[in-house]
Amino acid sequence: MSRELIDLAIERLREDFPSKSRSWVRRALVRFMRGTVREFNENTWVVRGLPELGDKYPTYVVRFKDGRYYCSCFESNWGLRRRSEICTHIAAVILYRNYKKLDSDVYASVINIECTDYYLEIPSELKGKVRVVKSVRVVDSSDRLNPRHRVTYVVYSSEPIEVRAKLVCDGDVRELSLKLTRTRRYIVELLVR
Ligand SMILES: [Zn+2]
Picture 1 (tube, rainbow, N blue to C red):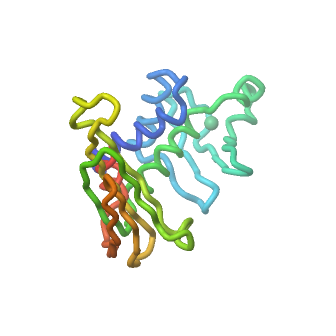
Picture 2: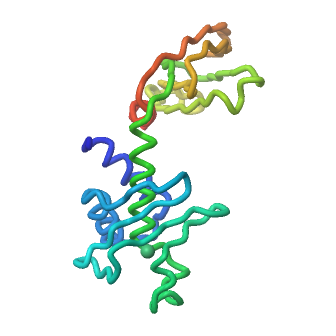
């Protein structure tokens, strides 16, 4: 496992559950790092219990249904108390999924520009197939009303397609032909951090 990917996977978990404690994140991480999560099918995972984390059963089953996670520990004696919470078995599954996603292949193209006004347009028929993320940093704010930005766009897709795009930078309009080439999902995340 790669440290960088683990850090990003934890970052995503923290963003999704900002109110959760450090110890909750730490326990999820211990479960994940100990390799206790196994994918059973697309929406089901089996998590091996760790007695040192208070688990009373050898395995727990986590399911994802109707946009929510359910864990078999909800059905234990503590079920009523736990039902409303996200247990660390679920958190470990989320970490596992985040990591797997970051470790997967995507096809991407990167555009770097420096402008005051900018816009990138992707043909509407590609929406849903192609995603665009960007990072924006102010590089010159001497004109307070019109600061100059350094913008990085990453255009990516699950397929190696060619994308015609329109890039507008301070009134300069350019037609681009972007060839999306293979990279890893976490590189996309790193580029727009
Ligand atoms: Zn649980």
